[in-house]
Length: 406
Image 1 (spheres, rainbow, N blue to C red):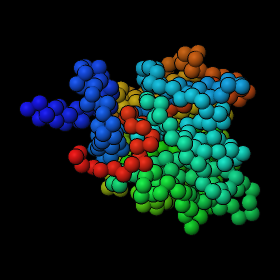
Image 2 (spheres, rainbow, N blue to C red):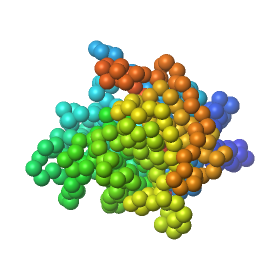
Image 3 (cartoon, rainbow, N blue to C red):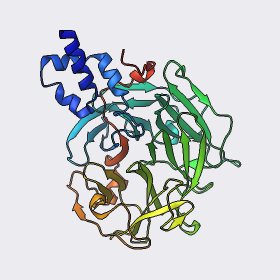
Image 4 (cartoon, rainbow, N blue to C red):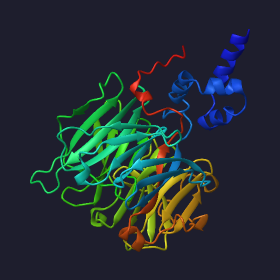
């Protein structure tokens, strides 16, 4: 009878979200023994309600404060952007490293800059502190951009590396892929077919997001450094790729056009702001069967338009959606703008301006002037979409996943 009761309890606990599992470890010795069992942790970290699958728990936003001290290295403090509660720390990395994107319960960390192309990348769980070191692909070109994706259909994690040589007469981008797991052999594979567009370097903004098994990577116009032009869409399972034109006219495709992708209620959304204009727009790609009752440009639908008081060229900025409060958030300089979607409705009248619900002055520890930002780069913070907390160690994706709890 005791084993049956424990099995029933295990099945009930298995259905809990990660944060409730964390609380459950403090309930009793029996609960802690079940919830810390490596087999339970592994199976729970792959459960449909924990990872990115259709109908799963909405993804969260994750704030990462990067603290660089000369002569010491990099210290990353991971926070909940809503409560500012510290969730974990990542330490002992060289200052050149920075987060690239969130993928379920993991953060991908890579060294930013062409001179670091031979440096390894790290997959880290910010909650447990576990880190997995992965060597770079062989024979890659000068400029490199990494991304991490997850396929709900195959339960596979994959790393993608886009590389190209700046200034080449016939610039082409290459795609290398590594499948984490026994089946993938943990070796990089290069796709034979190249493509002309280049990934925009994410020195100051997270420019990659994972939504429902697809990676969205911001690309730049050929021959124009940091000029957003298209969105590269990579299906993680099949590794097939296509491109989307951005919903901006060619006349504003300049380095002063700031574009950031993120997940908004399960949809791909981009925030577009052009220096010199006190206007911020949010665009989504609606489902194919969605009725076109608004403004469209290159297949995108204009969802929201806001006034912003800062029209300077390059203040710190970032966009994300807080699913818990239903808040659309945009940080510009030292001001956090918030718009409550659930209270105001999912979409605004085409061509009209929506009003922010809140404008919040950021605390001194998070606000930073443009001058200090460019001069020192010792401290900066960003918010990453697509995070779903788990207790899984990064080495667990290397183990073949059995979907049956047996």
